[in-house]
Amino acid sequence: MKITQKVQTELNDNIPKHVAIIMDGNGRWAQKKFLPRVAGHKRGMEVVKTITKSASKLGIKVLTLYAFSTENWKRPQDEVSFLMKLPITFFDKFVPELVEEGIQVRVTGNIAGLPAATQQSVQKAIADTANGTKMILNFALNYGSRDEITQMVQAIATDIAHKKLTIDEIDEKVINQHLQTNFLGELSDPDVLIRTSGEERISNFLLWQIAYSELVFTDTLWPDFNEQIFIELIKEYQKRDRRFGAIKK
Ligand code: FPP
Image 1 (spheres, rainbow, N blue to C red):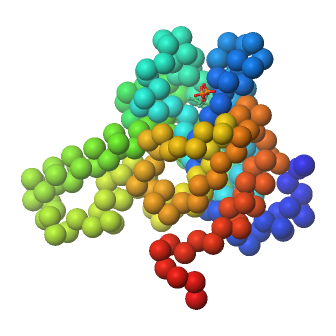
Image 2: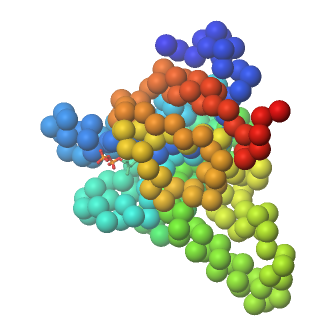
């Protein structure tokens, strides 16, 4: 099913502004097909393109994709180096299309910890797509929420030590300003967090930002994920009653 006018109308009134996805199951997809794990990541990269376009067509404003966590360095060297080359392949192939679609690439995570070639590719994609206003495609790359929170605490403590801030001034706004998602402003918190592959955990992803996100899980492995399943999950999100701790009027 393509995103027809009908589906768009059906979904139109309550489209989540920020969707975050834990793209899980690449390894299992490959194993099931007796392929090396990296074949799952390669297919997963193609799905990133499909879902990016779907998200933009639906009117989603921020799509945050968990592409590599601070814990993923523990994987075998050949898998890590494949995953580090994937953004280069992806951007080489798709940046012209992203520019055409008005999609702006951003990265959340520790870019400086990536191999030099990956850093260059990421920085170039960010610069080349900087004028995009339709949607932000935010890759969480070398990202870990505890790492982000640790850095936030260090930054706030430094501001206090330098007398730029007092302890009483620390509030949620100040904390948000010191997190890596600050550039997203009022869109920094996902409305919905999707995880594929049947696993139901958060895996150190956006712990502060998902305080009131709706959590939606699917058994589909990421390389099998598609527009139709995406739309079904958005519909599931739309059925949720978001109260943010208040009671219904
Ligand atoms: C989790 O599946 C997936 C990852 C750690 C990598 C995700 C990366 C992509 C989908 C491609 C990213 C594309 C770009 C453009 C950066 P897993 O390997 O943990 O699967 P398993 O649980 O079945 O082993």
